[in-house]
Image (cartoon, rainbow, N blue to C red; front, side, top):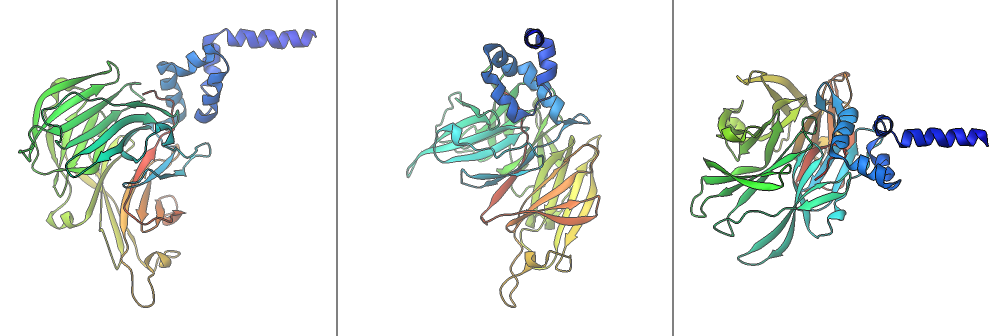
Length: 387
């Protein structure tokens, strides 16, 4: 009986000491920790606190000052289904059924938060969407409402900026045509989760080409946007709204490269550009460029190839009989999996995801997929960030 009293007393001491309790629960992985919110109102309050969520993310995902992903999220375009390839043992498949709306598609991802849209109605002259910001880990979401714009059918782009290592708050950028008759003039609106409000930027953007549907990256406080078929990136300093004038940055490509697939990405706080062929009947060739730390230019970091002679990859090129299929490239993602490891290059090619392991100096298979239509590959970060 005396022993039981001591145990209860110790539990009460820990439970009544927020600092001690925090030091214990912060070490618990994300998914199990979500269940602990049901223990009591005190635990719910602690585990829902933005400061705690920020500290938990930093404790579990920070490596050398940058985030490391939980997995790779594979998204089929124009479909609500997705597939998670785990890079850590404690990850689970994120689903978007909690949004309780049909026809969900992922349009942006940034460090664990997602921008999604739902097609509600379509007719000959009208298409109506709902837009959401959500965290699949916590299954929490918020429907976005936008400031009124002069024309209801102007084309818009949404972009997301979020760095949980710096702040629990995020920003959403709405770039829309200032006039339906103008093909190049755009206006910018900015939403801040810290103030829960929109502000109109004083800048209008003149874009020579339309923006790439997936080509946006948030890296070191800057948002990089890519034009379709263009040779430059548009850089916005999103951490300094008083200086949002766009900067043009030349891509490390030439005229012939415009006929190839070009993807921009971020890894360990460094911006990179991957260049490869859309299709190939011979070798698969991938060039990866990294931006210099002083932003003065690009460096060719990797030049990798796969051909039929590479052991284990013959079937990747195989067709029927004597006819060779084109090798269809979909997406590429570069990420650091573990502490002290060299970043790996993941490629979604044909119906497989493969990666290059620099420690072994070889290409390896990660997983096989059944679907073969156009796809996108995102880093997925499991965290408690609120929306």
